[in-house]
Amino acid sequence: MSDVSNGMPATELTSATDARWVKSSYSGPTGGNCVEVAFLAEGQVAVRDSRRHSGPALVFSAPEWHAFVHGAKDGEFG
Image 1 (cartoon, rainbow, N blue to C red):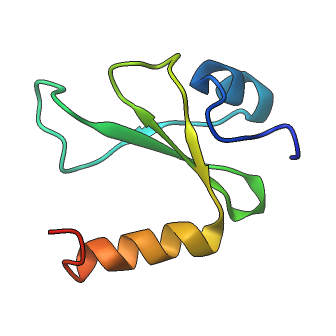
Image 2: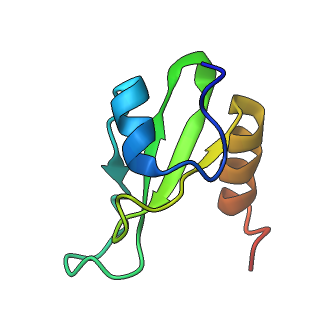
């Protein structure tokens, strides 16, 4: 999966990897400022803006993603 990189258009990621994007269950019904994630092969996780499906995606390794999720749960970000 070496062709996956940060900043690549999310639409390319979807077509190249069969990514299935999921919106957070915490997102409101009006679709405000939300993100979507896609779990990729080799444990990578991609994140995109839910309002800009073709915009850039950020791609995280499994350890990076786990560190972020645990930090968010522990209140490290505010």
